[in-house]
Structures are given as C-alpha cells and as structure tokens.
Length: 187
Image (cartoon, rainbow, N blue to C red; front, side, top):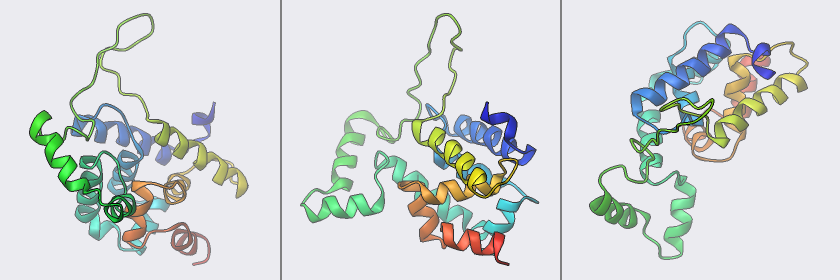
C-alpha cells in the first residue's frame, strides 16, 4: 500500500484534508482540501516552499478562489471564460440554480448521502477521483526523484501538475511545478 511510504508530514496533510472537508460540510475530500491542509502546515518542506513563494500570506485569497470555483460547480476560471466566449454566462446559470436549489447548490456541500451496508461507514467521506489522482501523482513524483518516501512536498508538486481548479488557483498565486522545484531543489 502506498500510505506506508508517506512521511508523518504527508499523513498529517491527508488527515488535515479530511478535517478541512468536515469543517466545510463537503460530501468528499478533494484536491482543494489537500491544498488547504498544506497551507495549514508549518515546519515542513511544502510549507517552506509555499512561504518562499508567498502563498502562505495569500491564504485567504486562495480559500476564496477555491470556494468560488466550488460554487461554479468546479469549473476553472479558464473554462468559465471559454464558455463566456460561446455566449454562456456561468454566473447567470449558477445564480438561477441557487435561486431554485439554495446557495452553494453546485458546490456539493451538505448533500452527503449516508450509506449503509457491510463495511460502509455512515456518513463516511471518501476521496474524490481527483484527490486520489493527486496522491498517486505524489507517489510517481517521489519515485521519479528516487525518494524513499512520499513527503508533503510531493503532494504539493502533484497539486501543481493536475489540470483543474487547484492547479489554476496555485498558478494564479505564483505556485507552479517549476517555481516549487526551484525553491525545493535548486535553492
């Protein structure tokens, strides 16, 4: 199993992502929750990289950008702009959905279904496919670097490489794979 190769710091990030999801009332743990958990850490390689790139000082902006993307149903800003170019006003659609179904209707918050049955936990939050992909990417990054364990820096690097909202938000705040690698490995 991959989890045994995680450092304590990386395990703490995963646990922190679960806590972030619970606090938000989300249905599942996504890559945004992993990012928020990374931003909460101190004294780790990833926290060093985030601080060196100024992301720790822009945490609130990052939180707001992730929340706005969730409100849009997970669409990136680039996707929203592309749809606008086709004459589709995402903000108008979101507003109409929220008028009918309530604020945050597209965010996947508060609609958790309780599962019952053998081996199922009532109200258990699972990881989204995207979050699972981040953890698998972290393993591949660590393996490619010939690192013996998977640290929180590998999770951060993985977040910068998977196309989507989280990578876009990070890039908008100066955190890309290239900038993280420069801080961590070429400093």
